Image 1 (cartoon, rainbow, N blue to C red):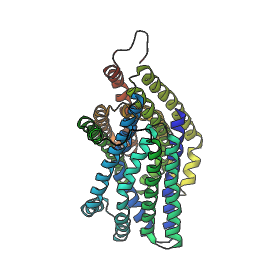
Image 2 (cartoon, helix red, strand yellow; image 1 turned 135 degrees about the horizontal axis):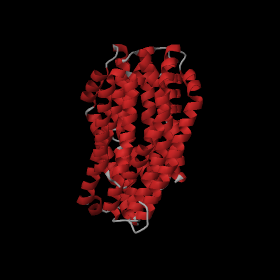
Image 3 (cartoon, rainbow, N blue to C red; image 1 turned 30 degrees about the horizontal axis):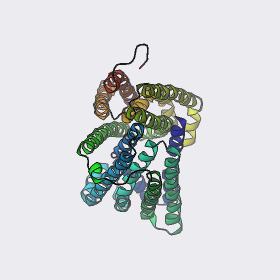
Image 4 (tube, rainbow, N blue to C red; image 1 turned 120 degrees about the vertical axis):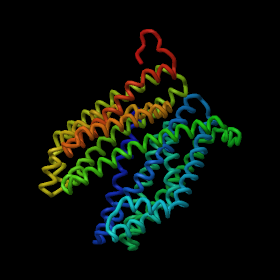
Length: 434
């Protein structure tokens, strides 16, 4: 498990460095509008690409299942189908960039200077769309093969090249905000090249490309259905997080800043828990493909147990060092005070979200995408229902709604899990534990 989860955690921890370097490089130019523009555009691409993260999840699951079933040729077909879909979606985003930008920037708002800088970044970085989505596929494929260390190497290479190119283009060659966007395109391109080289080596045992197998109607329809359901599930999650951010902004600058500071705590917890979810995706996918109920149930128990252990450790760290970290991240006394007021909710968040992360990995590994979609929508309804009931309590009600969202996601999936296990593997033998 840790051969997969460990590299995933490290890769997760390196990703925020890109934002830090980009912010520093642009920030040192001394123009607030440029800094605001790159910050806005970065959030746009984070959400835009996150919407298509199903490419990574489904590729990982189908690869792990094919590996478990011993279908070596199908492993290559999964990669090619994923790359083809990534290319179609990426090129579609490029073709639609003008109306897409108009809609996005109209929703985001901002000053003319900030929007102008953000548009420059957008029109350059949008060309990385096919490359970024291809990297989702390649990284998912590598993890699906239980080659998480190779996936880590590719991810770290992308991040390091991005940072180095940003410093060179922005600070040395004075390319401004366009330089930061070009750096992202270069990094994604290098990542695709590295990934394809690795894929060629790892797929050398396959018989070769078979067009009938590649275009198998049943497998194509199953892939599209799984991708559709994961995309809807991801969109529902994005709605919850964007609503949380927008409501924090409506509560005033101090509350917005306090929530932004505390969001960094949530990201730290997510780094560890998401790494374990990666392990669940591969282990459960492999066991599902091999039709091994005991291995599947054992992987589920293992990930849940370690997930709760990590969640408890993170919560203790937040209790012990939370106030100090808040002081480090902001010098405003008002923001510090507000962040401390809501720190208990952040402490509780990893303990309430651990089932959500772990079962996300289990459900993706088994491609229980339809149930995953439906349960996420149900959790979103709980989120909005809780917020409506507690909206009179302001930001406190908002935090409670977010915690209820975490708890509902994991709780619904845990409740549904035994039935799905029976449907997928049949009734458990006498004396065994699901």
